[in-house]
Length: 99
Length: 99
Image (cartoon, rainbow over all chains, first blue to last red; front, side):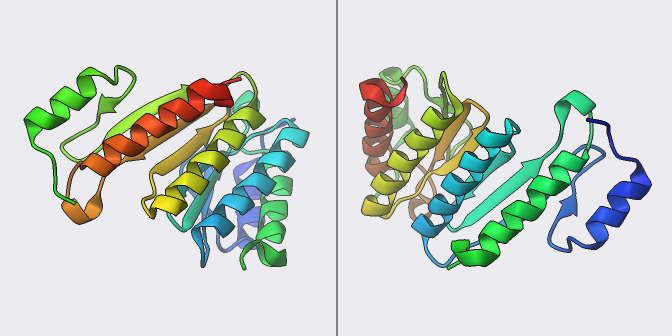
């Protein structure tokens, strides 16, 4: 999968206000939960989806805050797959994951 | 719970060769798994145990490597509870978690 251009990345991020560019290669978002185990269950869903896609974001759990970071190392940057997955992460959060 | 002395911490770490001191307050260990979802299941067990203890390590999942970092923020350092939990994390890994 091809790396997106700066212009394409900026356009994608315009519609993803919760996602922040960390550097050239990575975008990240923090998700907050009311309960610790709700965050852990969200991570389970993220991981199952990531394994199906064979594309695994970096995940961290800091009490009730789950952070996801994503990049396509093969492409040395961000690809369509990253943005497709990011949108699905947000959907999982909005549709019940958040609690 | 009281913060342990430097001497006590050194003694505890002598028996925990996989755990590394990060700084005054934190110790950390990386656990490696054969499969991504084995690592995720390990995180589920860690989280359930942490919630029971109401003491939550920082967890990260970087593909097949799970990193745990622990400290007792109330005590501003490391306590007996941290080392009790660390030993249980290692047991969970050794007894099947590792796969």
